[in-house]
Image 1 (spheres, rainbow, N blue to C red):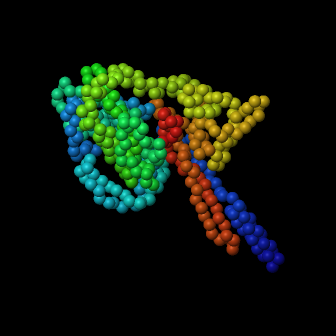
Image 2: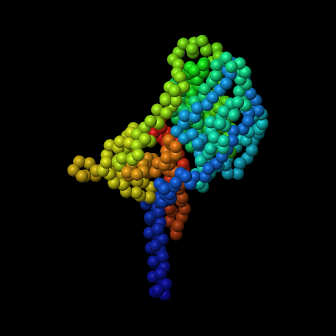
Amino acid sequence: MRCGGAVTKIIFLLAVVQVSALAVGGQTSHTRRKENFDVHEFHDKQIHLIKPAEQLSMTGFSGISVIDARADTSHIGFMQRRIKIPFLEANVSPLYGENERIYEGKEQIKTTRPTIVRLGNGTKKEIELFLHDYLQLSANDSLPQLLMVIKKLWLSDELEMAGKVGNNDRVQRAELRTDQWTSGIDVNIEWYIREKEVYFPLYRFDSIITKKLTVSEYAPQFLSLAIASSLQRMPQMLTRLEAIRHKRNFNIDEINERNCGAFNLPVLKDSVLKKGVYSSFTEFKNNSPSHEAYSIRKEKLADILYIQGVGGNEYVARDVWGYCDGTNAFIKSVDNFFLLQQLDKAFYIFGAKNVIRSTDSGVLYGTDYYTVKTSLELKPFQLDWTTGKLY
């Protein structure tokens, strides 16, 4: 009897300790593969643009060419989510003349492994073929031609909606919705008109196009919509050609130099990355960290970086962009540092931009408990060379 009573007391005490621990603080989950998921191990998904069912009349022009001026000319985006148990709703698409699939209010779940998307025959070639099918051009070689310069064309299920607002008459916005789903395409295209060997800038199309469909379901259509939308202003340009001819013009070498200059950066050109802490994105681009001596402590949900100050004293560095260990560079996001991995002239991470919090409550051994579990939502992102942010 004594022995049984002792066991009962021990079990009760353990239960109280467990409930107390649950009630006092939230639990954290350990992040897996936070810095070492190799970008070369991402799934590679090849897609193709769909041939449009109709044409856009552009008989004031005799031809069109494409320059892909992006940091990574091989890839066009990520598949970061997928639809769980979709339900179809018919909606006629004017671009394809068929029903496009619309999913209303259904659950999106993240993919279990990062997937990077590319056009199967190459971005430049597939877009040129699409334009050849979509545009009705003139056979008169004496008419001007068009030049399309792609600055950004990126599919994502994690689009940033804020700040994408045109501030002058050279920015054209497409369909933009601020609903709860952020799947779509971020596009920045510059259009030029070519007369002989002279190029005149027409306008810039800078927009986010979204629909209630993930990239996994709608990638070719997102691309086609972006290209078609960028051409909406073109017919009215024909009425302004005389005024456009009196504005500044460029030759093709100047256009190429301008595009290449965007990546003429020490961090891309130098053979060795300098060790230290980057206080800003500019320091990263210039391969010039402002603090050489540092140390870092990695915890379950946060990485704490210390900078060695005057006299050898260390202090916590909170407002920093990232750091370099002398071999690899890391970018800070949600209080963690994620490995930057280079493909072409672009950098990628498998990391997080958000912290996920889930709650659980109940009754254990007659005592109420409430817990908050916190974890990082790991997904692939690319570094934006213009802003220094992840998208």
